[in-house]
Each structure stands twice: as structure tokens, then as C-alpha cells.
Amino acid sequence: MKIPRLTDTTLRDGDHAISHSYTPEQVRTIVKDLDEAGVPVIEVSHGSGLNGSTIQQGFSKHPELELIKVAVQTAKNAKIASLFVPGIGTSEELRKAADLGISIIRIAVHCTEADVTEQYFRLAKELGLEAVGFLMMSHTQPAKVLVEQAKLMESYGADCVYVVDSAGALVPTGVRERVSALKEALSIEVGFHAHNNLGLAIGNTLAAIECGADQIDGTLRGLGAGAGNAQTEVLVAVLNKMNIDTGINLAILMDAAEEKVAPIMKSPIVVDRDNLSSGYAGVYNSFLLHVKHAAEKFGVGVGEIMEELGKRQTIAGQEDWIIDVAVELANKKGVKV
Ligand SMILES: C[C@H](O)CC(=O)C(=O)O
Ligand SMILES: [Mn+2]
Image (tube, rainbow, N blue to C red; front, side, top):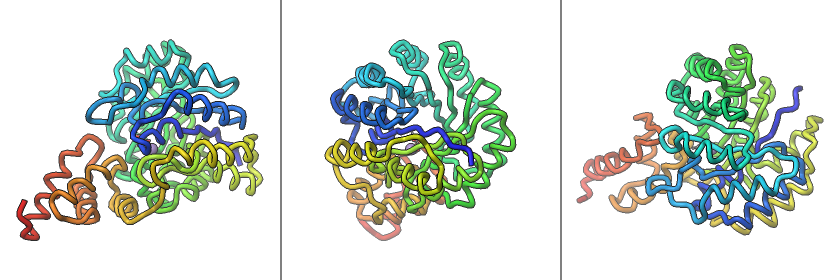
């Protein structure tokens, strides 16, 4: 079985889970450990990508370009990547990150919106970057739609396209359908990015590898949005057990997770009722905090709101629907709003 390239995104997806509060020292020490462990790619940026520090996405404690600079200066062997969401980031931030020395940009859009990424893939290639496409909320579309979108990204210059299970809603069969369809259709690499809302982040990542995924993601201690991601240290341990030698030092990863990441977590990343209801309904992981606030304000259950948002197939950027749904549910229950 082909050994997939691992990207650790503790310092990007994990940014969602610690309210965007990473410090330069935390970035330095985590990059140092990941680099020494032999992790080939480390992603660093605001959880919502370059320029994400806004009232809508959450303000960063430290300017992300400062964090990216520290990461590039610290890494001896690992490549530094950043995430980029068109509409949040602009060409200006992409150029600045490239000037700071990132090697990879991961351009993330909802899985039916690849057509807005063309200018950014072109710019990324002009800047000499490896360009990776992220098809977010991939559970919402069948494999054939993802193939159409991935082929657009390939035509724009993408070097890899990821199936991204943003809601943690996929089961292994759904992962196999999507990853194998992209492997069949593309001449570039295919990746998989998991979330753990159904407790399947590791299992789904293994399913992706079985179907030939060339790139996979993980985070130390699973630190990421919602129920978190596939735990990097567990992923490496399981791959070792399967005689898939990633060349990554497991002991260093375990120490980094235990001694550097766990202490900065605001709470353990668990599949609790809220995260499970979110994944079960197929709702984007960054909705949860807003849903919790609305549930409390309007006297309705988190699960009820999640179920309705899932039925309406809400996607990132439609957080305003949360209030509408909460008010409708409250009215139905005769709760005075
Ligand atoms: C912007 C999102 O956090 C990208 C991602 O990690 C996901 O959709 O999952
Ligand atoms: Mn994610």
C-alpha cells in the first residue's frame, strides 16, 4: 500500500478549537517537535485560513503572519502550508504568506464552488507553491459531483485535491466512494481530511488510504473543529501496526501531544452529545458555538437545531440560518421569544 504524505494541521484546524489563541512560542515548540518527528508538512494559519482574523471567523490573539514566520524559521525539514478560503483571504495575503516562505497553499471551498478558485490556483503556481484543493463538506455531494469539481481544480493547476469531511458525517463506504472516484478521474494526487464527530476519523482515513489516498491529515490530540480530526499520533501508531512505515517518530509525537498540545486545550476533544448531533445531522463543525448560544437564548435543544440545519443542508457562511431555525422551533413549542 502506498505510504501517504501526512499533513499535521494542529496549528490550523486546531486553531478553531482554542479560539484562535496560539502564541508564537506555542507555534515554535509544536513545529519543532513535529519537524523533529519527521512530519513532512505542517499547516499554520487561522482556522478559517489566511486573513481569517475577523469578527465573523473569530479574532486571532497574535497576527497569523507572525505565527507563519515563526513556523518557517523553526522548521528544518518540514514544509509549511497555509489554508486559504476565497472570500476570506485575498491575493494579497497569499502573496505575503509566500514571501514568508510557505511551500504549500491549501485552497478550500464548499464542494460545489471550485469555479471560484481558478485565480488563486493560477497565482499559487505563479508564486511557485504546491497548490492543494480542499472540497469542503464533501458528504453533501455524491462522488460524481466531487469529480467534476476536482477536475476543475486540476485544470486550474491543483497538484492535489482533498475530499474534506468538514462535518465528520461520512462513514467508510462514503469515503471509499469519493476517494476512489477522484483517484480514478484525476491525474494528480488525492487527499482526505477527517473529522471525528461519528468517532470515525481514524477509520475513515484508513479507508481513504486503502483507496489510494496520497495525502492525509491529522492533528495532535485530535485538536480541531467540533469533535476534532484524526489524531496524528494515533494515525502513525495504527499505520505502524499495519506495516505502513510513515518514517515518523511516534514517541516524539506522543510527547508533543501530551506535553505541548494537551495543556493548551480549553477542554478535551470528545464526541459528546453536541458534536455527535452535529456530525449525525451533517452540519459544518464551526456552527456549534453559535448553535449552543441560540439554543440557550431561545430555549430549544442543540440537537433539534442541528437536525433542522442538516435537513436544510446548510453550508459554511449560512450561520444566520441558525437564529431563524431556533426561533421557528421555539414558536412551534410555544416558547415566547
Ligand atoms: C475552513 C475549514 O476549517 C476547513 C476544514 O478544515 C474543514 O472544512 O474541515
Ligand atoms: Mn477541518
